[in-house]
Length: 186
Image (tube, rainbow, N blue to C red; front, side, top):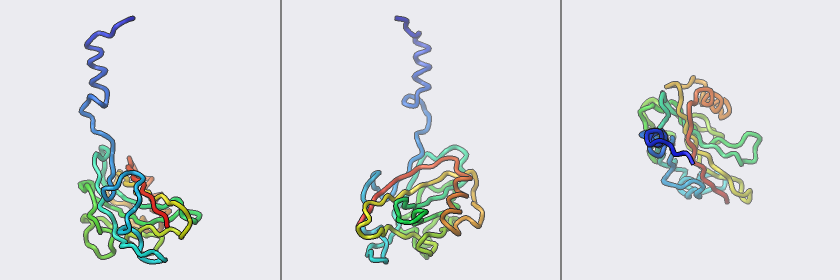
């Protein structure tokens, strides 16, 4: 058996992510909840038969890709009984210097978004957070919180007018993303 010289072995180990100074993966935290956790009632919509608090969760992230100029956050239910899923929240034009959103920042008049950030359209209509409220007995729904690192500081003004258009404009400028999926049913 041939042995690698110590210098070659050292170089290989140094190049390994476990032994290098390389930054880890882009991560997203949502309300301190683990991947796949059940959404608490505080975050659930208040209307359409649901009686939750409709409070947007605290969001935090770290290790954005190099070259990030801004961020966009969306909350989407791919399991909604519609042709296109259901858009629950969109926060656009989040500055590259931001590392999170405060709990309750999704309220229509909260004033808690980072300077320059704006909320986009949801399928509930208002430009604000709308928590989960799947049809009763429809089964388990997944709620995908996805933070996109963008190659631009600001998306075109038309972003935020519909969920589908917003998603397309975000995808066109995304240089990386981090996702946390939570669940809810009633």
